[in-house]
Image (cartoon, rainbow, N blue to C red; front, side):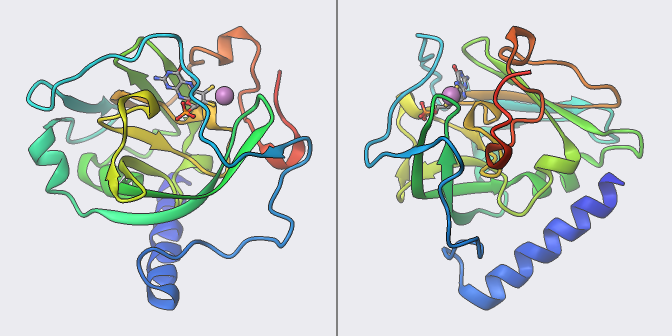
Length: 213
Ligand SMILES: Nc1nc2c(c(=O)[nH]1)N[C@H]1C(S)=C(S)[C@@H](COP(=O)(O)O)O[C@H]1N2
Ligand SMILES: [Mo]
């Protein structure tokens, strides 16, 4: 199941690159604003009140769990992986949306390929340097627009927006994208993250206003 999703995502990515060039965004409906959302020009900051400072020479990204090849990547090793840029919309559950965010980073599919999750892996659990966590089923996040992003608008992601590296999953509400990401764990069974244990929806689909469980 996940393997198929992964291959499909890689195919969509290749088609997108071929058709539109590196920084073009996916085709989407003409009505881009999900129900109940308001468009913002700014970029609000939402976090737990802690913006951890992680020096690049101390930063690592651990990818483990139900995988054949667990890794702990240094910043240099992470940056040596193929970087892409993708433009996507950002929808926060508190009802603001921001269009055309230009993120650069490493596709989740690349990391998936690197660690080789076993057949039984169906969920990803993301942990962050500020103690945050969130969980997503691989069916929803193994997509061509899911990135572990290190740049925004061509510049390193500011600490307040989750630098050095944050997860972007554009098709879900933004709380599913871990800022200050520290680890990605592939799991057979779902495990709820920080907001998910506090009543937020586990599936987080902006188009069906799937906000709270
Ligand atoms: N590590 C971490 N990641 C996080 C959060 C957080 O508190 N800590 N908040 C989430 C929420 S609710 C949203 S809307 C987005 C906000 O990202 P921004 O501050 O860049 O707008 O980050 C998500 N990722
Ligand atoms: Mo949010």
